[in-house]
Image (tube, rainbow, N blue to C red; front, side):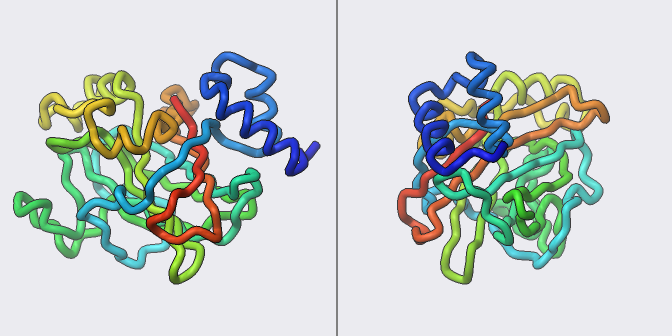
Amino acid sequence: MTLTVLDRRSLLKALTLAPAAWVASPALRAEAQEAGLISTDVCMLQAEVTEGPFYVDPGLIRQDIAEDRAGLPMVLRLQVVQADCSPVAGARVDVWHCDADGVYSGVENFGATDTRGQTFLRGTQMTAADGLAEFRSVFPGWYPGRAVHIHYKVFLDDRTALTGQVFFDDALSDAIYAEHDAYAGHGPRDMPNDRDRIARQAGPGAVARLELDAPDGEAVAALVVGIDPGARSGGLIERLFGRG
């Protein structure tokens, strides 16, 4: 059975008032799944504070962005919906993040490592009828002064863009780093979510739901990105996120 717009709005209100309900209430979790959501939580985000210095558009429409990068294989699922949870099909979603050593492709990395001309861990997908864009990557590393994160941009047309970052539960990040040799040479990270300025601005709703026991051994990160198609970059955008 498909939920009506009114039912969706009632669900969103309940999740706003009780963000832990995904864990606490099997009935509410079932309603979210019935609505077609891959995760829960509602929050507001200032889009203009989140892009960072490393966005480039390599023009790569591809699902697999890992290339030769080492690390825990991960599927990243972003679901773009409107405020009433109706899916947004045909939206362009760009993602980019650093590798296990904290290095981005295509840039000079603050002068430390020049990767211009390389394209690892960057790519673009268009959302399907259910609003989903899916990428195959590796779990991101970290670099000094920032919490563990993935960048994304959602384009609805030439002018409209929602820019955000995906964060991860600190304990899960530390467990992944401890168990996988690819991250060992980088040392302990220095910035948890609660001390990261951008993570604090994004709020707990920007923490992805992360599954580490997928049957094929991959991690699966999922969040729902709720947008206002009438808003422009720099405005307050209503968003929905999964929380691990």
